[in-house]
Length: 95
Picture 1 (tube, one colour):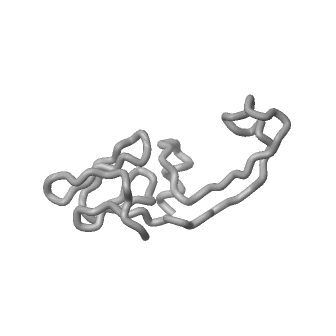
Picture 2: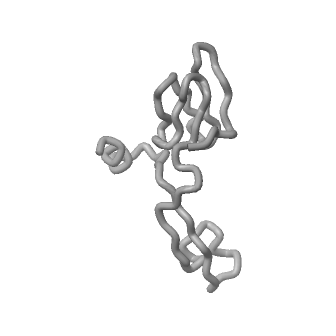
């Protein structure tokens, strides 16, 4: 757990997270949309800092940079957490 860098303190110990496009307003002791940021008494903490859930070497064509060095490979790194609002993301947060 590490204190987040991209947040703003709000009245009543709330915080606003600026890590992704949702700019979550998070009440004390609650989590953001991704489930990986939590407000501890007016300070936002990242719960997955330095933790890796997947690593892979992929063809560049799988990435948004597919026009950059076509035919090459890219190192992909993923962490826990999801900021999507689909049914699959919601089911995962309920488990």
